[in-house]
Image 1 (tube, rainbow, N blue to C red):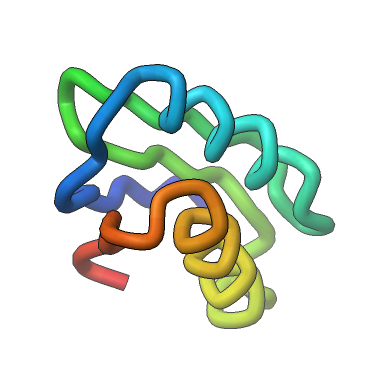
Image 2 (image 1 turned 30 degrees about the vertical axis):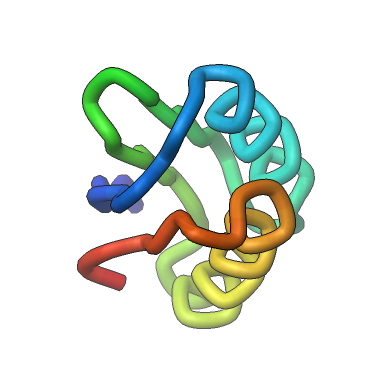
Length: 73
């Protein structure tokens, strides 16, 4: 299942790359792309575990950039 979420207050491309690497390691995530320019996160994961995975995604985002918010999740 592929979903696209907006990111709010993502400050730099380096932070986006760090988030992408961290989220890719989450069990159940098949692919992830974090775009600094578009301020978007594209996530492909197991639909049955979406809520659990999104909580872990939010934790990864907060660890890298505490001010960044995942919108629409």
